Amino acid sequence: GIWTMHFVAMLGFRVGGTEIRYDVPLTVLSLLVAMVVVCAGVFAVGYGRDRTRSLLLGGLTTGIGVASMHYLGMAAVRLHGDVTYEPVLVGLSVPIAVVAATAALWAALNIEAPVAVTVASLVMGAAVSSMHYTGMLAVRVRVTPSGDLLPGATAMQFVFPLAVGLGSYLFLTSAFVALSPTAGEREESASAQRPVETAAR
Image (cartoon, rainbow, N blue to C red; front, top):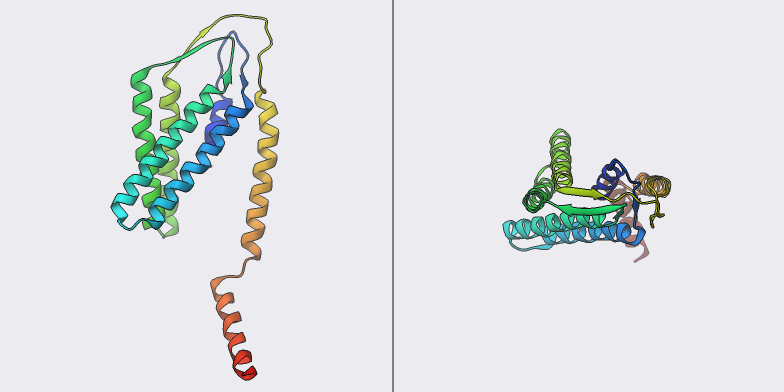
């Protein structure tokens, strides 16, 4: 979800005087980083003995990973010119990512009410977006006009596989959830099997 938001926002990145393409391996690497750090953060929080320490460690790991994902995605941009960054804004974007990640992990642990979950999700989305656009404000581009063909994929060459992949993932996840027995159904099934096992003895 975080990577998708980041990539869709990246598709809106425009620079006058040059076309933009994306390095495919680096873009895929940014996706893998997002997946690994989110899993690491959730694992740290879910299995850590000291809850507060685990939350801080998980938030730090996930936040730095989200920032890494963002700047790997930016490193994948190919254009006619040079891309540099404003160090202060880059430094500001990392704590924003860490705070956002920590808040998300805390919400996952402590919030159960549907309305509260919805509010927490909106706040988390706003925080991640703030990190992304703070990072984008740090970007400085010096265009060097050229007629050379840029390497990499265009935005549209990414959008179609992304849409198909996300659609397939959501369909399979929804089907799995719909077909999985509920806790009540599993309990009923276990209760029904107990008399059979007792009679067999």
